[in-house]
Length: 542
Image (cartoon, rainbow, N blue to C red; front, side):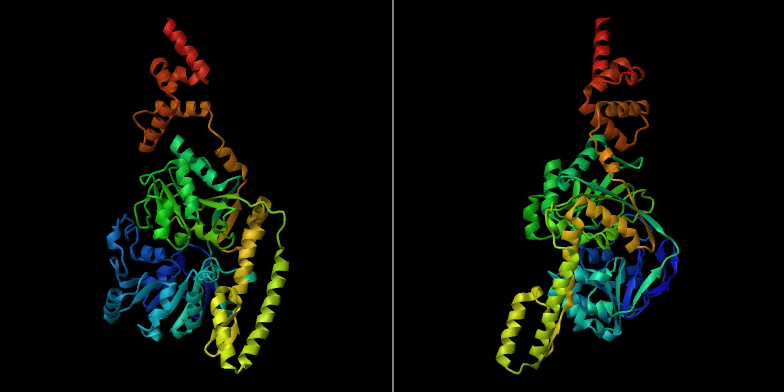
């Protein structure tokens, strides 16, 4: 790895361009790296993992002056960005209409930028002159993470990226060395050398049921009007939950409505069915009090809020929700872009580990996979010497049937070993069976986080008792104090404080009666329901 002295200002990169034909570890999320490719004087293809990221860049929720922009759903479509006529967003179906728009865009003078999902890279090569464009593969660590269900698309990127004028694989959370496939291990890797260091605080919260705990947090917001972390009030919450089923469970427990929440997930028929009437939204839609986000928008997407806290929800019995400590956690830490937000660099991680009486140690799993790779290498060598066409055709059909479960792929007329499959197996085993096997194992992984990711960030892992104490059920004395404090400043209350006062008044009408008949000073001295009732009875007897 090569340390790269960078140009930065106020935590943002101000470089003219990226180093070429390499991996570039920008170290920090939200530092404006993708903006370099979107705005500099080079023709760029910017390949990103999700449709949401394309939409977020082409239809930003804020204008250049920081003012909110509201986009109608009907406005959002593939084509030239309405805020940047040099930028073309490409996702979903590449039909005749989109091709016509792209053809017109490519004929215009000046610098051209095309931001597209990974699956469009191969298709673009036939529509442009790739030697006129540089390619930036953004959030490149997803090429490993998503390989299990996007095998063909990722294979196409790995085969075609050298067709372009130059290439750069960009991320703030590179694939750890222990999981790095050969094709990336052989690349030059530059690491941004930041002079400024940001502090990230993670609040781990082990519990018995992650969804129920998330619902408890939402009820805390609802009952009190806000959530207090480190003595500061939060009035909004983002829940990063990579399971629509888990999201629905939380919605059900809290009895939320579409007016209360925004759900950002894949807009498909199955998710509409799972959510049963709840709307599917996106990152450009107006914010609501509670936002739920699946991995569709974990990375690269910009969110804005003055008081939102980011909560991660991981259920040990649902592997889709088990996010990696070294790749996913830092990504989520950078999603809130509002610099004045006091919680911008704080994350609460709610998790319930799956109890395991037995698990395969990582070294044993690694040795097993290495043996399988060695066998695959010998098999590939035999096939490359084979001359019987029928045997080769039969083998090709078998590899096609096995898909991601085989280590051997065919490139042209030759068979090669694809170690991406092996590294994915190791990564998945490490995450689901090693890190999340117990609360202690996850806590240990957090302790090592500052060692693994040691540039640009200072990682602080808070005591788990902090969250436990916050979520301890408020007692009557707590509501009593809040009520008296709010009544003392009546007439100067904010909207949220008015809502909080109304919530407490509904929950404990005796406080309203006590205030009305006894006054705030007398009420403040009476700490219990019993004492307030006694005072009211005494008043009636006079």
